[in-house]
Amino acid sequence: MKIVMLGAPGAGKGTQAKKIAEKYGVPHISTGDIFRANIKNNTELGKKAKEFMDQGLLVPDELTLDLIMDRFKQDDCKNGYVLDGFPRTIPQAEALTKALTEAGEKLDYAINVEVPDENIVTRMSGRRACIACGGTYHIVFNPTKQEGVCDACGGGLVLRDDDKPETVAKRLTVYHDQTSPLIAYYKGQGILKDVDGTKDVAEVFNDIVGILG
Ligand code: ADP
Ligand code: AMP
Image (cartoon, rainbow, N blue to C red):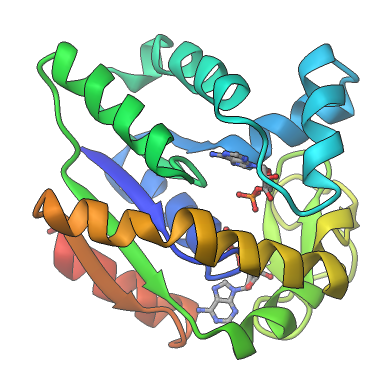
C-alpha cells in the first residue's frame, strides 16, 4: 500500500500517518522528521535544511528528492509506505510519479486532510514534539499522560522552532502557493480522497480506514 498524505501544516498528517503505518504495517516516512534528525546530528544536509525550515520555507527540491529516493531503497519500503510531508511541490510529485512509473509501481491513495487556516495556529502553538522519537502531541487535543514527557519513549517534549505563530503564518502561505496545487494533481490521477480533519483524531482515522479498507 502506497499512500501520500496531503494537507496544510498542522492538519494532522503525521498523527494519522503514524496510525496508518501501525495498522497496515508500512513505514511512516516523514521528510520533516528526516530533516530534523539531520539537524539534531549536525549533518551537512541538516545545516542546509535548517536555514530554510527556520524561515518557514521549503527545503529545495533537489535536496529533498535525493533524500527521499535514497529512503525508498531501504528494505522496509518493499510493501509500500505512507508519505507524510512529501511531495510538497509539483516538481516533487512529478519526480515521484516518474520514479514509480519506471519501477512499474503506482500510488494507491492521496489522502487530503482538510482543516481551515483559522484552526491551524491553535493546533501548531499547542503541538509538542518528542526530540527523541518524533512523537507528536497537543497540550489540549492530544495530551501526554505526564506533562512534557513522551508516552511512547519517555523523551522530552519541545515546541518546534517553526511552530511559532509568525513562522506558522509563513508556512501557511507557502502551503497555499506551492503545495495545495497537489490536490488537483492527484485528483487528475484519480486517487484523491478528502477527509474532514476538524473531527477528533479517532474519527478522522475511522474515516481514513473507511477509504483504505
Ligand atoms: P502535520 O503532520 O499535518 O503537520 P500533526 O499531525 O503534527 O500535523 O498535528 C498538528 C497538531 O494538531 C498536533 O499537536 C496534533 O496533536 C494535533 N492534532 C492532530 N490531529 C488532530 C485532530 N483531529 N484534532 C485536534 N488536534 C489534532
Ligand atoms: P513538517 O515536519 O512536514 O511540518 O516539515 C517541516 C519543514 O521541513 C517544512 O516547513 C519544510 O521546511 C521542510 N520540509 C519537509 N518536507 C519537505 C519537502 N517535501 N519539501 C521541502 N521542504 C520540506
